[in-house]
Image: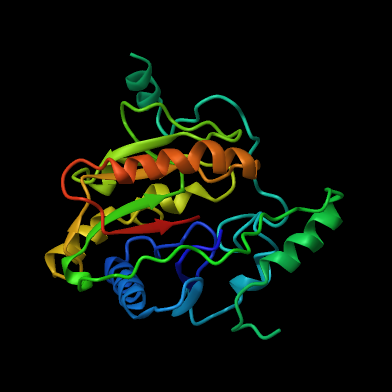
Length: 99
Length: 166
């Protein structure tokens, strides 16, 4: 994609902006993002924020590809079928959207 | 490669696709130098817009489908993350459904405004479903919609876009 300013976080797929229910971890990640943006001067820079999922890197062994994240996803291709119908999180959402 | 290195997804994807008998994945590459707009104000004065590709929507909106859905949803930035739903086929939704801030960090951005790290959060956040396997359709359909939403943002003009991919 090659954006003008990029920040890298060493997080599993699905956890880009942090670990669930850890607001301070999430806030700190974002503070680092904006600080990095402020300090960049070269288009196409990718700045490593030095943020990682865990001190224990063993999740990376199971993250076999972009098809599963090594934390919650099973091995192999854990993508769901690419269906052409809207996929609601809650049934009440579907009802609200269709009325 | 040591365990502390980032996961080499490109290599692993190639290997896994081969093991599974899939055709090679062809990544889109942008080789040109990206356009550059200098940030002229301190970050603490910037109006920031959130653009996130994790498939977020709110109740009342039609959810994304999972076959190259190139649409967007505008989510008022006053809505708490607890009102945000996520739908996508290519990442585990359970953690994000427990705490949408991990792919749609709207509550955290509000807190950064309160603590004056950033100036303000734009009126709307822009959500899309990033699992689009047609580069052409992403460029020709989705990208212009995102650009238009940012350019035409109600309220103060957007100074900086935070793109949160999944």
